[in-house]
Length: 70
Image (tube, rainbow, N blue to C red):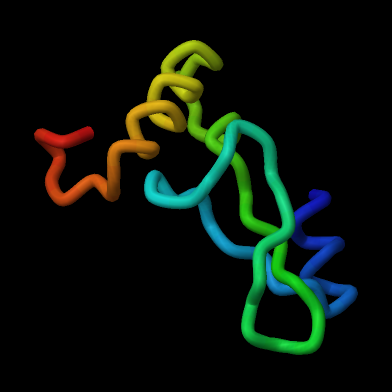
């Protein structure tokens, strides 16, 4: 509901991304005049916070290049 409301008000909403999402949703440069809202890992059904934090930590070593990296 909140996502649809944001989109209805002209906010660009970006999907969850293993490469760039934090645990919570956040603002991200969209290349436009206003930032986009990037949905957080907490939106992934069945993904616990500990696993989400592990993904964030692992990302510090570089981008995931394959499912094996993840």
